[in-house]
Image (cartoon, rainbow, N blue to C red):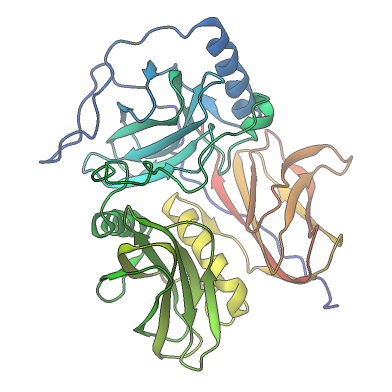
Length: 444
């Protein structure tokens, strides 16, 4: 076992911009030549009593994580397969969170947040009934929030929150719902039914994704590649990449593509990363150890049709995440987290703490939390998953994430300066982990 880590002070600085924003009195559509993606609700109405109870439970769960809910946005009645949009004016730089709460019969809801130019800032299109999307703006902006009913018909309430947590509370447990949804995303039944309007063409989908990455400081590396493959076929595409830089490779399949995978190999043939999930939108974050042509392989396991492939280069990491600070297999995940955090106004305080992880092992690091500041801690483990939580010396829990995945992130905004302990534990698997923190000024 490696000696589990030296503790380094974990501190940082948050933009004072997470003040409460309010919905504008007169909704507007995105600016420019783009049309609004969906009708805009103009007349709010109160939810039915059962939905009001569910909204209250969700609001309380987010408040417990430090969020400050706004006035409720309009309640919508959505039929399965339909979407509705709402605009929100944000007058100062800040981060907002959005969640949709439906009646129990709503099996799968999606959320997308766009700016006035139509660039997507955040989305949650997972197959569940409890979407949560987080978006940050750096100047006064108009946001457009689109709610879609993928499975189910009924009333849906949309909540907007200031100071949102990076991760939503377990809303399935809060509402005592079992998430119900489709296994492979939004698809119409197979057959000659024409084009599925819920699935965007791959070329359009990947440009939208690249625009979203650009908002976090990424830049596209090389040209987007397009193609068409039958089931069971694989293709390799070379990409000239630079040693010490980190990248994200992404692909989107068309409406008849059900499962497509990405495998990234170094010039030596070593696999740097892969996404073999059962979906048509694979994404791989990795770091290049050598300069030269890297092979990016696409494998089409189910379905057939068009696809698009692109690579985005991550922004140059802060000196604390510079090449060599972390092993390659940890650095790719760390750089992705760092790019997202810095786009939201956070900054790194100290070098990552490195250690060895093994099943059930717990590492405890002392930290100081100062009044008037917010703290965000992130941990990644390779392989395996990591649990992360923060306690006072008396054992009182301040914040926790035990979502059985890696990376994990938690945050806390203390009302008084206190000594605390940061805990990391690997419930399964063994390998290495990295742990580090951020700081911002607390919202006033």
